[in-house]
Length: 108
Image (cartoon, rainbow, N blue to C red):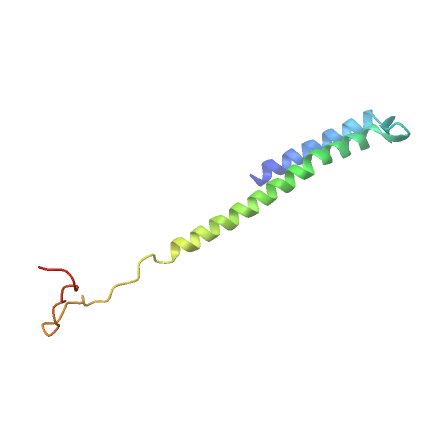
C-alpha cells in the first residue's frame, strides 16, 4: 500500500511540475475592492490545493487518533477478566450453622 501512495504522490508532483511549466503567467486576484494580489498561476493552484487538503487531512488524523485510542481501550478492557476466578473448593454450609429465622411480623 505504501508503494501505491508513493507512486500517486510522484504522479501528482510530476503533473504539477508540467502544469507549472506551461502556465507560468501572472494573474491578478482581487481579494477585496482595494486589495489585489498579483501572483503566478502555479502558486495559486498550490495554495488552493493546500487550503482544501490540509483541513481535511487534519480531520482525518484526529478521527484516526481518537478511534485508535478507543480500540486500545476496548482491547485492554477485553483482556481484563470480567468474572473473578473461583476457588477450587465450593463453599458449602456447615452442619453447625443455625437455620435462618423468619423475619419478624410474618407468620408461617
